[in-house]
Length: 296
Image (cartoon, rainbow, N blue to C red; front, side, top):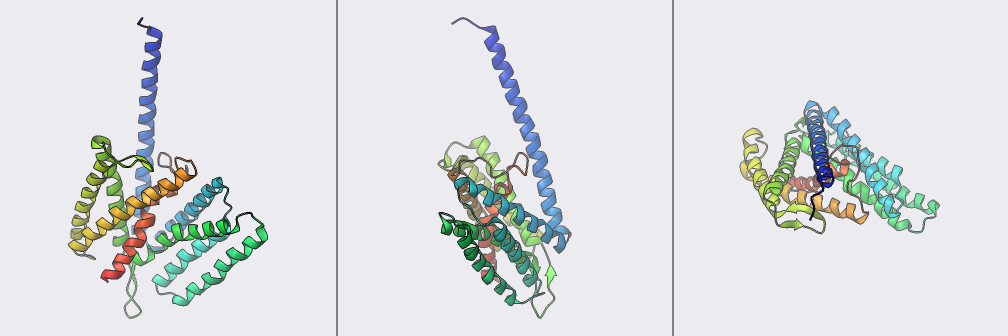
């Protein structure tokens, strides 16, 4: 076979372009990731007002992203009504957790859910109950998990003063980030056996095990910084985050594959959309909430 210098030069240029593109994507991804972590941590730690504003915005953009995606599958959810309900759900839980209102505030959601059914009657769509189901699913899948955050940060009861302590919520994010980062690093360096190739071809058992061990160790260490839980409960907390977070990630991958997309959005350069960044949290939050109620 004759050596072709032109072909060789083209291959070298292609490799250089690929390396440049990969390096550029890595830099963008790193800067976005650091900014994302900074905003989350500062907003949680600064005050309960900044906490409220941050997660209200995340619910708004997350639900908008979700309903925009399902429209690709020719489903027509009641986007605006559902987002309003989602924001009201978060606000109601915020006020209730702060003991500003009592449980009667949740009665407001009964007529709002009826509105979804009533409005669908006037839309005259071919699949009305699919539209209704997906509208309600967005509220349960996105707004509800973030609404439960209020019970992670507000503590006390009607006898004692309610106070804001974000340590539990901050720990949830720390454990999720450690698991995601550890799984990625171990997967890239050691990954050979696919964890769930049908839904996520890049995830490996080696990455999952390595990330899980690192997360459990982090949970063990959190007991020294945050005394709200003892060492055993912090380790169990970490285990819940590992399991629920992994299934949350796979569930979102399944959702994206069902509508043939790679990323849920482009709001976070190099990272995708809101759902891409919070997929694990969406399932971990309810499981952690149940566990905290159980041990308390």
